[in-house]
Image (cartoon, rainbow, N blue to C red; front, side, top):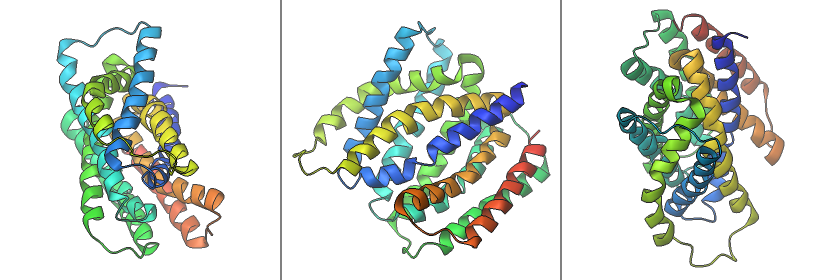
Length: 287
């Protein structure tokens, strides 16, 4: 298997893992304060990351790498989780999926700015159509009114796109799992204070769903998913592999159908098929 194909496989695995992030966050904020949730997930993942770095005797980043690691920590370790946690207090997870449909465009844009990638015009056409399909479908499935949640999700997507692109560049010389692990460790001191200031006053009222949500976003969304994702972006290209995120909303709907027994009609199947076509087209013109 060549490097590009490996990148797309790793990217696909990362997207599947990330698909459960927003539903899990929605479940977690029902029992935890958003600030505590953000600090706790980063703290738990950061502790595991530190053990991995020690266990594998990972090489320390170069001095020039810490600027990029700080950007990654500020965006995907702290910014995106915190903003989405607050946003999901104001909207159902279905509406938040609208903005995930815009994430591939944000990733590709920052990939061009930060990573020097120059996709062809046809790539942007496929990416734009795919993003519009996802946003239109998710909007049609949601009755929530626009508000502060929308603004928070939009900012979160912009920050996430920057963090993805920055991590992809750094992963080429540092390694995918090392990037997210060092970023998590770098964020640990900043997460210590909010962990205790937002500490839940009582624990007995927190339901099982909230605990499961916290566990998922800490282990899978914050660590394992990024190991695959950054490796995929580094091997397959930020712009091209980033378009796999267009599939993420539909995986999330599938999870809702399987776990929450929600119906999945032909419009979802039709739009998902069209989005897959856009992903294939974007991949072809990514370089």
